[in-house]
Image (tube, rainbow, N blue to C red; front, side, top):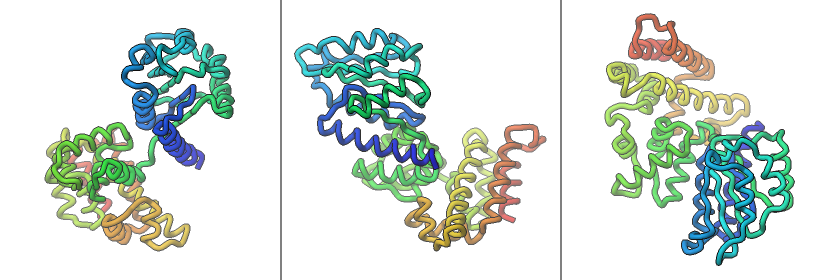
Length: 350
């Protein structure tokens, strides 16, 4: 619950900072941190574009890496007066590499009014026990600092995030295509955005389809983990084992760990829906929407949940974990990845 609240707070903070920066309202200090660096990337880009004009950047813009400087030098730079500009912009990347943050503590309490300092702690959470963090929070309460910490997005929310992002870029995406991309790219928003940018450049229409994802992202045009999940949900044994044959004969192209990850995500989504139906007495469609399943995907999951009630779903997740362990240890014996996958399918389909 606490992690979810932190995640939601980070997203709200991102929206708040984005709006303020777009309106030309800047804080003296920005501290960007957290395990999901995408949101920090966006804020950094906005500040880079909005704080100074191109002409003002000649003498008032500094981009440094913590590995190439120290906190004391940065503070001295921040105390410098801007040249022919109302302010200067100082961006520090990889701030987690500073050997000490102590020199910033006095600066945070009394920052230069004509400097915008940005400390980006890439993929790193701030230690809330430190004096630096406590003074940063005091400064934030006084309006002297803005602090954003971004958590990694939950797996079950990735497809919806993709749909929203695509819409923000004046495109649309089929729900199955969004799910396929989510399964392929995982929870890294940086990677997802890179893949989507590739898609935007590679398609002629404004709607992204499953075929577009397969062709432009490099997923098999014939089979993929998404289709295997759907076949399992339908208990289509012939299609399941046909896909398993292709995967088993091409282990480098279809690594079993990626396939198992997709299967785990699929059954975990079913588990969430079934748990919502059982614990909160919700109907299927209300439960599905609450778990981030919309549109045509609801029919697919309705069939899957009917074929795999709660106990069978839990058993399938257990079998997937067992197969994953065997694929990484001596538990597989002489069996290859293809044989392990087929054995798993046989057990799950029973």
